[in-house]
Length: 587
Image (tube, rainbow, N blue to C red; front, side, top):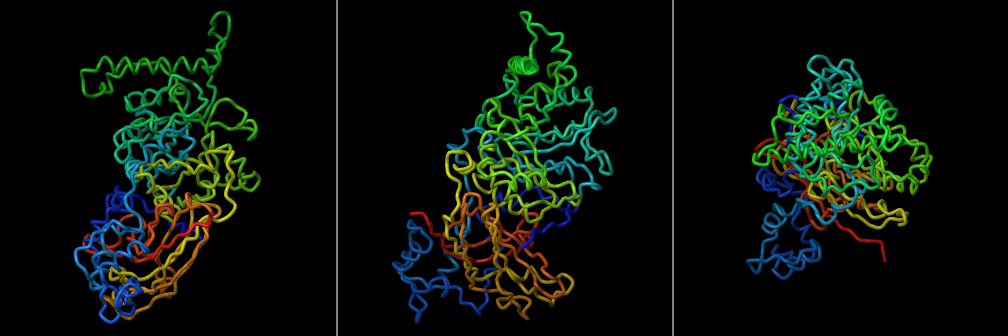
């Protein structure tokens, strides 16, 4: 199945959805409240689920058999049962259609894994974050930046230009798109950076400003980010700081260029008869900023807030001095491996493809073990479509930058991936991607079996143009997220003359098997389509989850629209009931 490169619509107050149900509500309470709980009588779901555990004649399941079912099928053994015997229809409604029975539950941050260098993590990243729609013609907006942050993004990209009397501006390519001021963009980031996660936000600058305006960028960053701006005393690093050490902070990433005034300083500055290097000069400037910020905080320690903008200490500073992640080009992987200092670089979609076709995976993974790699969509994707992030993740690329406004299949996969680790935006890479001494996986290590049983809530999918026409439903089960795990399976098409009620609910009881090579990278994507001749694969709903977080047994899959909100409205929604079985191939 190919990627769905849908055309994003420009953001507006009507569809700018800040909070994602698929990230913010894995407890299921709101979802269960709206679910109809009707199933097609053509598939007796209760008998399918409890087959072999109940008395077929009386449709009763005894407590001991129910305990055995939960232990063997659900892998749960801590349930307490009130009665000695249950009707299987009641047991299905009460135990299976429950808020604690979603296919994945709300995850929490594993604090013990957050103390390694930044290069050891996948980081939820966006491309041209300020754009509200298509790359060439849509508006730039602070709302787009806020939306990305509220959707869990930790890397914000801003294209910076000189602007006019209002200061530097953010816009795309200086063409048909409108602009916003750089100050307003930074102010929005300061306000929303840590609303959904305490872990750091990285601002990556695509910087087209003149020397004079670059100094103004630096002043704005100091004034607006205040106590959140992370400025290290060190100019270049041999190892990255950890996400835990950067909690509550905002880092700046920019291209590494030796500016003209640096060269002039090198020619003039003399310490003990020796010229100081560019890196030494940068380090001294960073120390000055760091000291100035600390002094300002100490002098205002009696106040609960950082000084207002016009009280911020005026520090003559070059933008280079506050850039913490240098975006650089390198000649060979050998030179990158032998260098003492760590750095970051950016690859276009085409460069990523070229490198993965011409370099060994272990060489690429050795590079991303130390250095930070950002990959971004091709410039030809003018409608803001996205590329499949699986290839980049497979070589350990930390920042796979996607157009968050697109709401297409790669974005759904990205949302599913970053449900892990408490949806904090940072996921530790598997050991074999963080330790070049470990052997990369070459054989499947997990056998995953997914059975699509039945669906509920299909009344919401009636054709808006023709309410008497119900969808011809098929469900696609896909693996993504890893170069080695890219498979899709499709159910048969369910058709019904009924528009509402139990008979309109699809059922399948169809099983699909997957051999998974990299379960720590893989994402399970469930996509629902209308196969009616008049529509030709009309998208209905989707849901994605990390394979590593899938729960075995009979589980509920909430369905979401392309924006990540529950399908339906405030009164009704839909779900798919599936059965998950997993077994390892390791000895």
